[in-house]
Length: 118
Image (tube, rainbow, N blue to C red; front, side, top):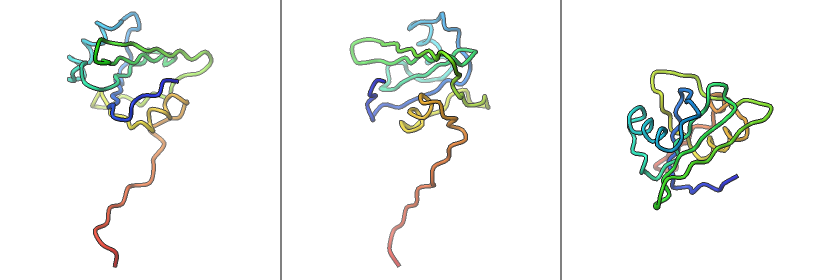
């Protein structure tokens, strides 16, 4: 698996995408449907209708790159469609998704922030 940089944002497009689309078609989806710039330091993640394949589009400072993963016997646990068709993933959630976990059911402990010790 590729070691993605920790400073990259990860955006997941919830709607299924026609996987005949390549860099240009996916860039248009990022710009028009996700309302984001395909030139951002980010990974843009797409899934096919059967949820057996992922495509990841990203700009690497000299051009676009497209990464694809196909599962042979399983499906990706894709978040259900809600009002917003784009969600932001943490790098931890991204790793979980690639390993087959349902990220909508995994809830980490809520971070706590204190100002003083009593």
